[in-house]
Amino acid sequence: MSEKEISAENKQQKTSEGLTIDKKTVVSILCVLTAVLVFVGILTQIVPGGEYQIDAEGSIIEGTYQEITDYKLPIWKIIASPVLAFTTDNATTGLGIIAILILVGGTFLILDRIDVLKYIMASIVRKFRDKRFLLIAVMVFAGMFLSSTAGILEESLTLVPIAVAVSLAMGWDSFTGLGMSLVSVAFGFTAATFNPFNVITVQKLADLDVFSGLWLRLLIFIAVYVSLTGFLIFYAKKIEKNPKKSAAYESDKLIREKYSMEKCMPVLEKSSVAKATKVFVICLGFVLLGVVASFVLSIAGNKIGNETMSSIGSIASLAAMAVFFPVGGLLAGKASGLEWKKVWKTFGEGVMTILPVLPLIVFILAISYILDAGRIMHTLLFYINNLMSGISPYAAILLMFLFISVLEFFIGSGTAKAFLIVPLMSMLCDLLCVTRQSMVITFCMADGFTNLLYPTSGIMILAIGMVGVSYKKWLRWSWKLFALEGAIAVAFMLLAVAINYN
Image (cartoon, rainbow, N blue to C red):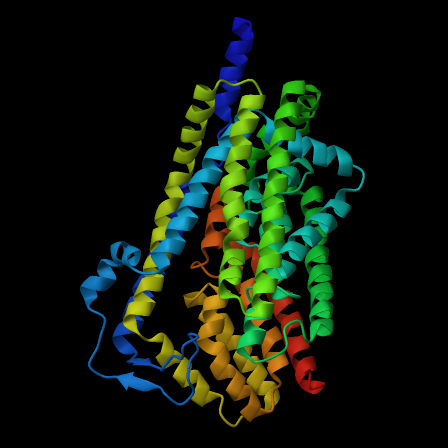
């Protein structure tokens, strides 16, 4: 390699930063999370503690609520919550997310340095250059389908950088890329058909036949898919006409220059990059097999009542990503011609790029710790239960939707929310003449798009941090979409009550 080529390679590596996390975005989100932490801390001091009795399966027993009058969460525990959060069961989940982030950060810098990201992006752009908006339709369907059926969510983080790069190369912006990746996956939960982590879990807790009521959930999937795709295409056309209308115009400049068509298309002629990309794609195939295995094991385990099989299924997709995604990056680096020492060094540098977002995960865990240690969640549930007593079925279904949407702020896990509230809500449905099947779709729709609404959503915070979009800008762009999906949810819930959906 000539001195000129070495100089060019060094210059390229300096501008290839993998997942470059915008520091201002991290600081602004950290400020929001600090405010949330203070808010929930205050709640523990003014809302009385209380608890329901829990059965052997972890579900609430109706009529067993008791207020706790002699307990308040000590102030020092609120202050120390970022540390104390790692002494709870949630610490395992938090550490798992941190580990995944570290692996993703290291892998993406390797892929960036050896031009695999540019190769993938250029291949997609070349294929869809004359069918631009078909690309949006295909990517939205793929994301929604995988989450609606197999329940992937955290795995979508790996799609965000590629989707954003493709979006910018097409003349759109980061928000369009986020819509094609993160949003489509999250909305797949809203339109869940037989997602094992919300539909099947909720149906089992509500004592309904698994997979029953599928016809209406399919209609919801179609409605959400059409509305999301239409929204993104309309927005993309607007940005094509005037890129400066994008709230992410300034932050997109560097990424747009890096992944310009002029710079990316020549990469398709490099045999070493093609070989490295092939190796990485093969490893991605094993990740996809993990997703399939997760779906099959979760479904089978739930169907036959095998908790071990269900537990393995719940982690299979993340485990496959944690293993094969970084392995794919490392092998691709070697296949491109890099020495192992250089591959591992690059991986280490990539890990350093992701470190600024780790405090965000810690604060989200701290908020969960305060709510749990403050023992106020059952009290809030008790108040809602009393509020809904004796109202009409139509008002009841809307209040359920509102309640689950608010609860999402405090408890992001759909499965955790299901075990907490579904047994009680099922009994409430019987009293209020609302079918339990209607409650299932209400739960899914409220749990779905609100995954991206609150600053306590780790997946949303990390995704927008990857592309340098602040939480304020995110809300400015997404509120119309949330309003649209909320209207669709309300329409289907009222329809379910009207037809006695069962």
